[in-house]
Image (cartoon, rainbow, N blue to C red):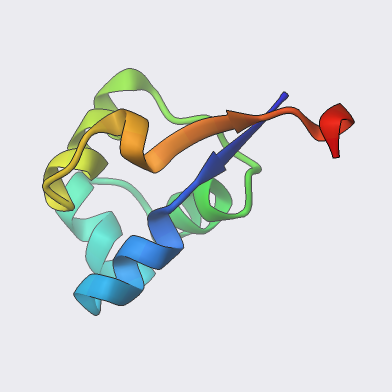
Length: 70
């Protein structure tokens, strides 16, 4: 199972750069890039902070994808 996110899509919708989002949630820009590319699993607090920025739920942003089902 791999973690997938909609962060890139939501950033584009809201015209936020990785740096903008990182600043809003208190992490480095690289962390946002790693989240978007599936190389980092966020803490619950970070996931909730990101969801708050986009005014949505954690479940709407983060989901697991079964790679073996492809």
